[in-house]
Length: 171
Image 1 (spheres, rainbow, N blue to C red):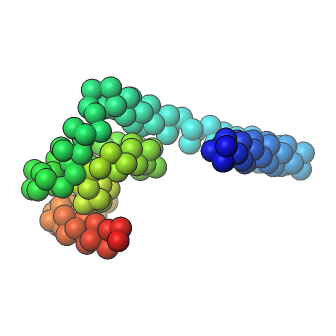
Image 2: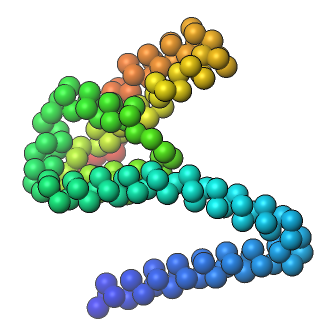
């Protein structure tokens, strides 16, 4: 019974948030319609930016749940892959697109299925390396800075991931 109470409480909080948001937009509209439209356009733009990455993440989650059992996932990434797991999570981080928070639900699901924190932290760290943005980075910061920064991120992300997993281990 506690579970349904928790669900109804969460539902109430969600609806209260929606009601509060709509009320605030209404209040701003009454006081300054131009700012209200600007805020709505900005919100819509953010929603459009996160929709595709969220759809990709949830589609991946769907197919992973469909074809890979939790036991297989645990066996695959629960700590036994070593350097292969670090390389795999690094490549996944580099190739991942969209805002980072769009990946949180998928990564949470991986964690619940037994994926080691080392691989999750490594994925999150290597997201900073984006080969397709390298020319833009070089334009703004120069060759030396851009190349050195990306190499340092790749070299030290496994160390950051290791320390993160070590410090976040549940006792």
